[in-house]
Amino acid sequence: MSHTPHELADEFPDKADRIHDLKMKDGNFRKLTEDYHEVNRAIHRAETNVEPCSEEHEAQLRRQRLFLKDQIAAKLG
Image (cartoon, rainbow, N blue to C red; front, side):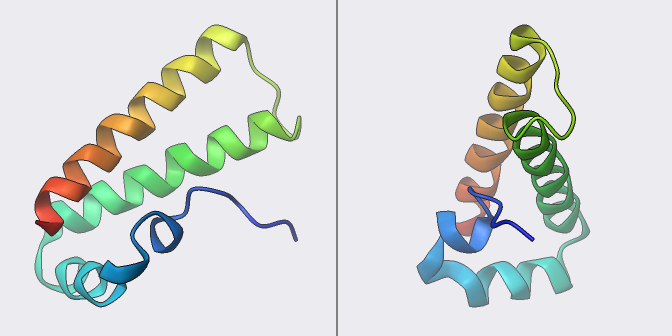
């Protein structure tokens, strides 16, 4: 199994406990993290040609991941 880059633990290494706590207490935050992981894994599958897609679609996925990451970062404070 390959390492999927851009996992939240890698993006926010000093916030792992806070991420876990918010996921347990805040359903909206949990949904944000689930959406982030889904999009991040789709990007990884596209990059590794497991599930190739068009450049436009991959760019759209990257924008979506950045948007979700920004929302997560804002909630982490």
